[in-house]
Amino acid sequence: MTDAHPDAVVHETTSIGGRKPDFKHMDRWFATTNRLRTEGTDHLLGAGGAVLRYGALYGPGATDDQLELVRKRQFPVVGAGTGHSWWVHVDDAASATVLAVERRATGLFNVVDDEPAPSSEWLPHLAACAGVTPPWRVPTWLARLLAGDVAVAMMTEGRGFSNAKARRELGWEPRYPSWRQRFEQGLR
Image (cartoon, rainbow, N blue to C red):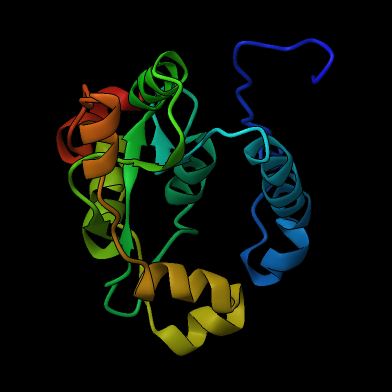
């Protein structure tokens, strides 16, 4: 890269796709992606750049793994389902990326919609949009035994993030500001 002197570099490397999530052994399952995110990002930030932290992607093809688990009733609401998730439609993630490149942005930006939501709200809504039975509810202790600490933390302790900086500094406006109205259209 240093010899090529590119105008921009977009690093969106992951090893998540194509493998079934293993929440019980998250450190092992996520190890390659963590390495790509830390070491790869460190190399790029030394050149001065931006980090875009996308919410959970939804849209064509982006939620297929989750939908499969919801359809099989293998994605329950854990405990009270108070852990918040943040979402972003794939088109909105792409538009934020383009703006960051065009504006030669630097720093950290959360690219999420306007409405983080607890799993007790978004997971039943996802099931309804998929036309399947609402998810089971399982106690925290049972989920910890079956899926591990990471899955329990995600479903019970996750918190929402703000997109205010991306709006302010990139001029980004999400086309889909809420997952509530767009899950159904985004699943097609």
